[in-house]
Image (tube, rainbow, N blue to C red):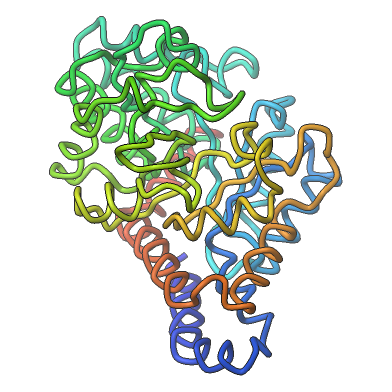
Length: 384
């Protein structure tokens, strides 16, 4: 793995030296630009087996450097053997760097890998918070071990939203929050993160700047929190940052006219550049929530949404499909093409993308240096 990361470092160094000149000349080397933006894309797919066309597309994109990772959703989980086959194929890909293999497995109503494939269930965040932190560590150690045994290397969790609106249809009603007090959220989120770190699994705090007060579900439309959001919703992020537990942060499709403007994942909003980067001083990886949600795709085409997310300051663009009805499009290839064209036209600045890729590479390197290989050998033994 470290050799593969070193190879990626050389590619990035070359791009840092050459891209500006190439782009100034009209982006003559579109292949280099495409490779530059590849690590910034996390793509979804349709299918449950290695033989399915959607899976073959996502594999091709990974090996060509058009994307840097794959998101496994509930629609991709068939039998356990089929899931293992797909993950093994991703892990053995001829890629410049080990791909991110991500899943959102919070427990409770958001659990992809539980009794559906013969594995143990994980309690919801709300249920976990009704018990002790010691019990939480035990539950999350089991969750992390389960993911490690399957060689999943990123969990798109924990949720650190404050439960300030228990009637919230996507957070409060689904028991996804640890509570309405920042200290409570931080204690249990820390247990989640630390358990995953012990298994070599990356975690992502969500949904910045705070989804807990919303009255709407961003899966169904833009969640405007102008009248409900409070600065207290930033406290879990700042406190976890101070403890060194905020490796990556997911930004939600949230709007607040006075505080950060339009949708946080789009260039009409300033939640990333002003609130997260400048005010909170965060310089780690920022990724979008899935841009395939209706909050985004009802307003603009996928290509525009992806470009606007980069303009807003996101380092990783997550896209799991291009429309509600389209199960055949090659998501990684199309989003890469959109970003590449925007760089070549000057709409996106190469320097900003290089900074994003450098953050992603630093995240990868820290993951590798923190004993990932040793952990994966232990996971292999567990799975056998």
